Image (cartoon, rainbow, N blue to C red; front, top):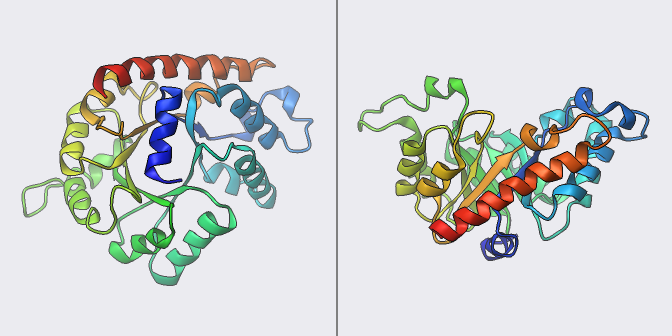
Length: 271
């Protein structure tokens, strides 16, 4: 999916919601456990009830890898079920050099046909650029994350008296462009979102941390939105585990709709 098509989805749905499919088999409602593939059945119902509000879905690959071959099968079935006009993110956080990165890229972009993949930048240019060789595919580079441990490295000041995350942004922006590279930018501190936006004004951000982690959707839009919206705000647990019983999918749809309505207001206000 290219940038124009993604922005069209945002405009059509008045939403920049990404639903994270962090599907933990231990949290799937009991009535689904009798299904042949409970993980896929859970995902299928979540997608059915959130598809009108979501412009992207993001399976966290660890939840599928942990189940072995059956997990990969559930993931592939989920990916094939997501409508083709919706952006898909493999939240795999890969990052290695040379042929290894090339093969990771082939796995997720060719064999599985995801639109994008999250990539860790720590090993530098040659760990990232192999993912950029695929037309209409995207790298989503970890830049400024919302977890507590992010301070261990991302907030270290360099010799140029800038934070490490700022150095990562400046350097990596020369590897790709706004049509094939996005950045993971945590929502927990609005002023840092503003710093990132100043460094990469035209790129899309994938934004975790809204809701349960304390991030403000209003601040994300205020500090992060650009003239193509430039935001995909992810919600995982707050949507997919909104309910625990047979009405789990309906409750997920209600939560997704609430976020979509707020996003519609913010698009009118800031776009």
